[in-house]
Structure formats: structure tokens, C-alpha cells
Length: 313
Image (cartoon, rainbow, N blue to C red; front, side, top):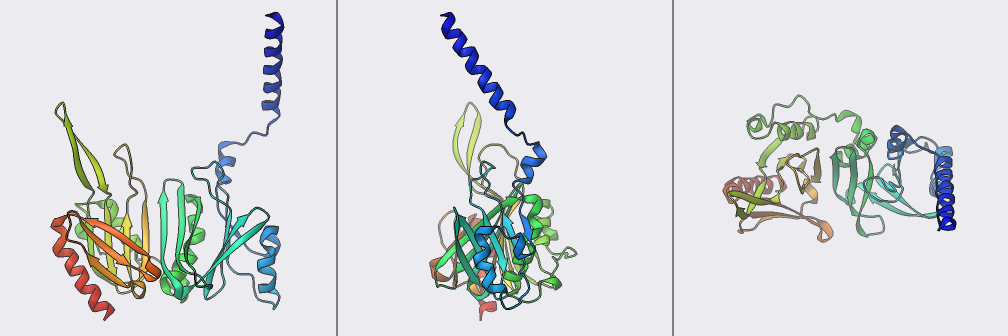
């Protein structure tokens, strides 16, 4: 017995010694490992991606705007390291695969929509469309929300179709959506911040959270969320969908998810007659997005469809 206890004590000493030798990161340092960062020269490009950039720069071209996102190993989500860069008429996403990488290059005219998600410190930027190789796919880059400003140039370029993004700040002074203030002050502000300068709102619908009754027990009624609160905004440029993330447990809702869909990428809009109503957005290459609405919103959705048809015509 004494021999066994001695072995246990020796093992514990070894474990304590190992822990003591491990490098400890502060909370701030751990958080920084989740930040995206800009890459401003070929020398700053990680070695695995250099073969992609060297041919581009051989003719003396300036280094493109580029951002590196971390691997996120063990931070909220597990995802691989990616590098996104602006090559003029296309946006390329390089995804690390060990000592090599996969490249997906999206011509601006082939991008069906862009998505931005920001929930507390967890954000992502997603591009969905057809690559220069004719493949319908998407790329999602995850990063800490404190570095989301690095992706603003990519989003602006996609939304403006390649025109100068410097002249397109968000419409912070817009007085649109004032009638939403009593329904959701949060969504009124989210909607206002989603507009480009000079963008004209044609029709907008705010749909509160849709719940379904589950059961009533001991006088208390329980519900499940069918669809989170969301807004659908038709402008003269695009269809913007803003929604809260479906949340399981608790009443707090943080941040949001934005989808920006160019009008010329919408193949069709259609409305189901079910309860709840379903608005389907058909996109190229069989892609589609859906939003649920209460039956009471049918007239508003029909107006949206009419006004979209007028814009598309």
C-alpha cells in the first residue's frame, strides 16, 4: 500500500511540474488569437500561400487588400485558417489544408449574396456564388467581432458591384423605419445601419418572433420558437434580410445576421399559402433562402412581391 501511495505522489509531482512549465496565456492574449488581421505585403503572407501571390505580383502589381482569419482551434467554433483577398473583379478565399491550400475565386458578377453574422464576440463573413471554375459553393470566414471592420471593404465591393466602396458609407442619418420604434428599437437601428448612402427603401416588413404552443403545465404555458424576429427590406439595389439567431434557452438576443442579395441575382420570389407563410428567394445555381411570416403579414408580403416585380421589370 505504501508503495502504491508513493507512486501516486510521484505521478502528481510530475503532473504539477509539467503544468508549471506550460506557457500560460492571459485572457487578453487568448482573445487576440481569434482576431483577424490584415496582410499588407508579400513578405507578411504565411509561407503556405506565397505560391498564390508571387505570380500575381510578378508584373509589378501592387499587393491586394488581404485579411487572414485564424484557425479558431478551440475558440467557440472549430474552423480552418483562411486568407481572403480583393483581386479587382474577383474576391478569392484561400483555405489552409496542412502544408497547402484550396483556392476559391468568386467573380463579382457570380456572387449571389453576402452574409454577415455578429453575435457577441463571434462573427463570420460568408460569400455564396459561382467560382471562376463554374462551381456553385460558399466560403465562410470566422473571426472575433472586434476585427469585423477589416471585412467592410469586401462587403461594400460586393454590394456595389465593384464600384468605388470609399463613397459608400452606411446610411446612419436615414429616417427610414421610424414606425418600427414601438415594435423593436433594436431592429429599427439595425435596419438603418444596413443601408448604403443614397440607397432607397421601396418596401420593408418587420416580423416579430413566431412561437408555437408546446404544452401547458401547472398553469404555465411553454412555447418553442419557429422563427426568430427578422426584417425584410427591398431597396432599389438589393434585398436585405436581417434576423436574430435562433436561440435555445433564455430570452436574451444579441447581435444579428445580415444577408445582402443583389436584385439581379434573385431568380424568383414566391409565397406559400401555409401557416406560417413562407417567402422563398430563389437564387442562381439552385440556391435559395427562406423566411417565415405570420398569416397576418400576407398583404404586406404581396405588396413586396409586386414592388419587386416592378423593380425587376
